[in-house]
Length: 242
Image (tube, rainbow, N blue to C red; front, top):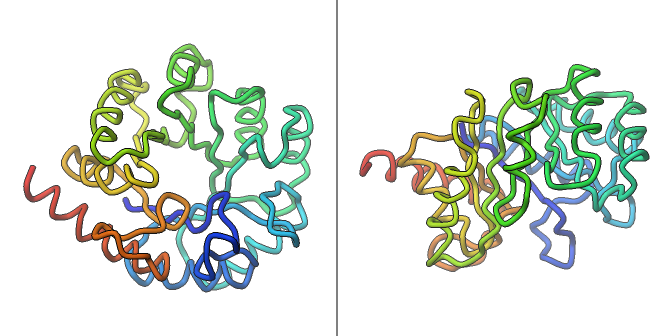
């Protein structure tokens, strides 16, 4: 599986190619799925371009995308979008249209409660385990660990020279993750080395403008679709060389 991560916390300041509005996100999703992405992850944005968990914004965004692509669509529940854990849970409970899945960063305060609220509503949980945090240790003792859709192993090391080692250390910390599927990905300079490692290990991965603005050769990516196209090449080549 190669998921496309359409925008992340990025916005218009990062370039015209980063989709922000529901229409732009739908356009980007269509192109990325046509390029080969089999799953979509996005950050719904408020009218001023900030990440939000607003039921109204989420509904409009999901409707726009689902009208045009048949693949699963997931969203963030990052604490930066709603810092108060109780308010974050209430946002989830107030969603009128549900995503197929949502990422929950296990090192953030309130992660267990947010994940439980999502599971109660029938939304799949991507357990976001970031390198360099206590996420793996907390997840290891979580009563919800066997119920998540998959583990989102997020390598936060942006250095191309060390990101693969950081990824292997994170996977070691995660252990067997109670037989949950693992999606391994990196960010910025580490995005491409970690994607290739995922290919060699036969793990799911993701690519998109959330994780990197650059192609493997250092050129600026012009779209999520371009990153997906190159990601599938790099992922497949890594598998053949493993």
